[in-house]
Length: 209
Image (cartoon, rainbow, N blue to C red; front, side):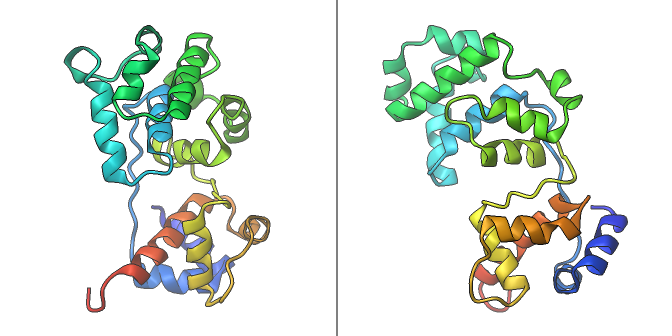
């Protein structure tokens, strides 16, 4: 988290700046060991599940492959769909995971080296063509996988709740309203999003902690 980003956000949005001062420094360390394919499969498995449930299912899926390691796209396609279903994936998620694997084999899902050279919107446009991969999923890849500095997941409920908390608003902003307001945070919208998530965590924390 750069001093420059915090200074810009504080000047552009005093309400957010006041929260940043209370919350302190947030550090994000992108996981650069994962390929885009691995990150997207993990995101699909996790959709609409708690972290614990998603982790359990993912481990069962990995157990289908040698040494429990993450499979290649070709290895996923060689596994029978019924085996993936037995590991805990819904029928829909089996379809999504297999479609991801097919697109990776076809070169639609970029390699780690390829994606580093791509612009954010180029990545979003390319990956959201794939069944089961929406904009939010790609935005999580951009933030936590690639460490891109100017990503605002305007449809994310936590980000919208955080905005309402920081700005003492009763109603959540619509994604469109949040996107418009977020223009003033450029080019540090990822940092803004991280603090809005932190605001929700702080509100949930027991008193005195």
